[in-house]
Image 1 (cartoon, rainbow, N blue to C red):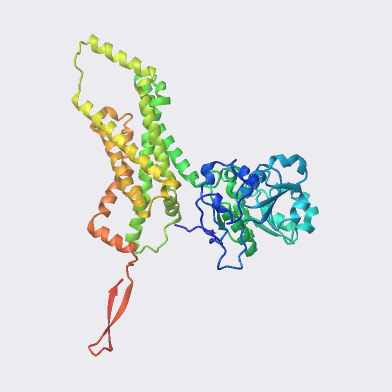
Image 2: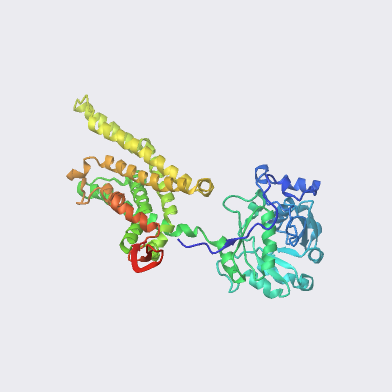
Length: 528
């Protein structure tokens, strides 16, 4: 697995507090206006721990981040949310606006709203919360901005819309200032409601290390986790992140759609086209519910097996080459990284299959067929149509399906970051690996129970095509058989040694000492 590019900043000062009120410097309680501002944020979010910043003992060279004055240029939604969060975190905020009288009511009363030139003079750290096309309006402030730290929070409307990033463009306009890219991946809603589990990171980059550290301290006090992304050349990548739409889901979604189209076409031929050609019966009404409901479990079942198939291929590669240090092919590496998304899509299809199955008796066509069957039985005077084998088959089929859906639900829930972070590695591995394999086995039993003896019925082979569920068994059964083989003591022991660092063909030379304590000339080789 490839490592992350960024690195988290170390905690600069203070320690974690239990509530927002204690996050302010000791002996400096917030003014009443700041308390009113903080009341706008939900109590649950403000109760989240913020980085303490009152303790600077033992580090006289570090200036507490809290209490310093922060400037904000701009009066849009993000600028207002940023001002609220800064005030609630204990900062003094000065907002620079071209129309301060008209914009003052939009900001918390604890924030000072004044003209841009006046705001810039009162602080050394300034958040530039304006669009790229409005950067030129700040050129008149170039003299007073000299030596200041400018935090660019802007984003583009399209990926790579400009040749250079917004931060680099801002730096070219103000060469005497230090520009830091940051806070662009945080939404205005997150700033107002507090740092959430899925949106706590603040990506920061700049060519000046001291400026990055200053902005990182501010982010920590605000309750976020700053991540150092390197020099200013990374700004373009950071600005593209908010514009990407589910980048990790692209391949899994296309895979699921491809499987759905394949199985849907196959079921359409068997359930609709075959009756029309052979018996001239119109079965088009089956397409919206019945054909889709037959397709969804096939897609879910195959996707679930594809979650564990790359692990089997990786184990085969390690056994073949006798090492764990040989890099996997790119396609296998990508496959391993997308297993979470594939598993969640498998659960989604299984959940839809359960809902569709519950809706089957509600169809008007089902009622007509039920009445028609009852009339035929009355005409033929059949009083008892109970088939013991079919009753047991359906009971077992539904019961095993419910268990499989429950296991998939557990796998999906533990894939969520908020749940996964509360589990240790052994717990997470047991649920995702052991219980996941059990879910695959139970799903296989669910499929086999559905087929029962139908696989041997020649009437099921329409156009000489086998039933759909027989096709879905190919990949899952391959995974299950491979897992059983890997569990054999001889293979399991060898695979475990490889994953602990043993490599085939490598030896270590040990020199045995003689009886006198001196090393003999003979050497004994031993496997690692």
